[in-house]
Length: 129
Image (cartoon, rainbow, N blue to C red; front, side, top):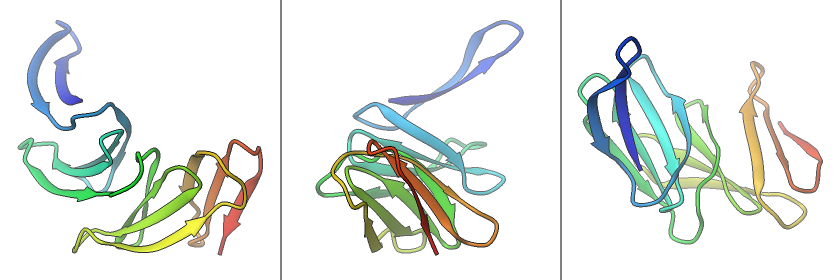
């Protein structure tokens, strides 16, 4: 639910920021200073890790958000059966891909050639070109 900076040597909290109402499911680097987090509260947050400023928040209306990846100008999120593409400039979902079988999309990653890999509870790997 929060982001915390901890001193490794002293194991002491240096800074703490409340981010989400639900548990945080994933965290990725978007750029050198910006991270994205996904949560069970159905949001993605963009945060400057130097200033702790929340830069943007994207709201899903129907599903918990699980894993994240960066795909061009989009953040890609996985959820129950779906992969959603969120435009980082507008915060709007611009594309939805659906797995063939029911269940959570457990993993997503982007390859160098621009393909998207995903897998879910059906133990299949999908390559989206």
